[in-house]
Every structure is written in structure tokens, then in C-alpha cells.
Length: 67
Image 1 (cartoon, rainbow, N blue to C red):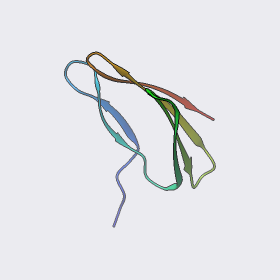
Image 2: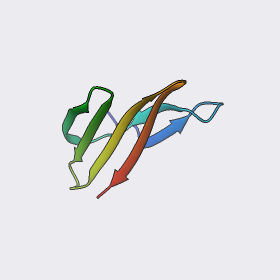
Image 3: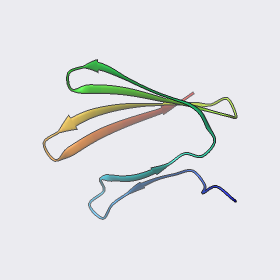
């Protein structure tokens, strides 16, 4: 079975809608504050994808960094 390719998709309004990250070795999610979550995906090829999740009036804002 082939895994889907990595993608970060937005909906018609430009809001984050769908994230696919195959080959994740470790998923880590930590609450940093009452309304702020930090997520790290450690991939099998050695990358780290960091995400900050913050609630907004119209949904959630995601800031992504890759190392």
C-alpha cells in the first residue's frame, strides 16, 4: 500500500483544512498555555515539523516551521 504524499491544504476561504504527513516516527503535542498548543512531528527522514496552534475568532491559526 502506497502512503499519500505530504500536503498542507487550505479550503476555499484560505483556511487550513487538511494536513497529511506520512512517515511520522513520533507525534508530540504540548499545551503551552490555556489557548496555545505546540505540536512537533518527527519524521523518519530526520525532519522536525513544528506547529503552533492558536484559537482565533473564526477558527484556529497554525504557524509551521521545519527544521
